[in-house]
Length: 550
Image 1 (cartoon, rainbow, N blue to C red):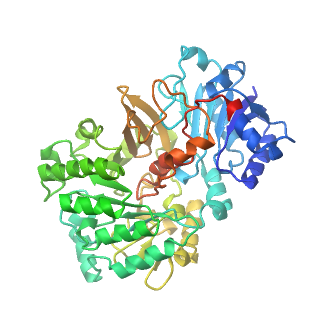
Image 2: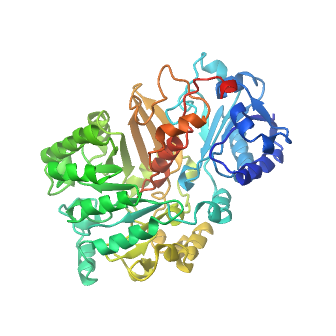
């Protein structure tokens, strides 16, 4: 049976829209294609010569009601191209799994597209409810039989290879290491290993990045057409760098969005005030225990009570001063896996996001098993190209550049270049990094430094499922990560609630979140980057007017 399509797009140029029109018109699975009327009016010159029609209704459920006798596709491409044959493969999975709802997105590739395929009988199962998740997607994972289409190598080659010049000519995020030194000996961290510290001493790596080198980095990336975000963290505790506040302030002056990951042990009140005044954009508090006993057993050298006091002070001052994005990062290990729910319950009303993630250690069987709780059986041994190769760079205190934050040893063969004697853009477009990308796309991971020793599950932010817990917490499961946020957080979801109806992208709604920067940070580039990008570009909106009024 042929599909009826409601195609929603925003922030797209004529070239991208034309590409997608040609692709959709050639697709034999489709019956009729509609676009929201306000978008039809905006791009009438491109659409009026096609068979694409304006849709006058208010949202996708109303569209589904008008096409009750055939499956429907909600296609949201934003400003991105749709990969050829993706729809066919998704539809085949949908039929072979006898699914009522099939979901696909481009989070792992940092491509803002989303496809939701739904059978008409689903409306009968909803009892007149019209459920949406806060991110604007259909809340059907826990209601009807569902499956998720995960982009295969051909899909990924299309974006990473064929569309490289469209989407990946500049890095989206850069991890900058202010400090190699740390004041803790966390049990799951490379810092507790003598082999690492011995290697660092032998290589005579600097404990801290100089401000001159940092300034060189910021001066360059601030000239890019699309300025990358930076995460001020890598192997050590960034707040130990005496120039940390100065670093944040300089990035802010140059229009660069900055975030930091900290153990919070040195985050005293005076430092908190300075950091907030300097213009920090987001902060991750690393808290790996729901109780004092577990936390202090893992974060060796830390005082739980002092850490909690520091974090609470920051959160209080943040509300008063700037209201930047706040996260807690909980790394799951054998020692603390029983306390993740406890930690979420303690902190969910205080911070914006709580990220519960598997331990990023090669060969970690618990890590793999935790991932496989939600992955399809066919994914158990799957190997995917790592999105970091196309989106992120890591720069150490010595200026060494790698494509991954697992370059703990800083071996010569792992290093792509050094910003002391080359520009970031030269390194980003270098033959060495392009060769690593090529080998990754041809599944020759053994030829890719760092990737060859990785289980590659770590590098996948693949969306597996979503849920709402206790009518309070929105949980999005991405590969080895679970991202928790509370529904009542109006900073994140101002248009989501019992009385709000989530509908189409409206131009006027975009201004609500233009101040939010797009994150592409560390192990979280896919999910967090796209949660924020969706909000920034208006994919999540209140449909308070009829389409005719727009």
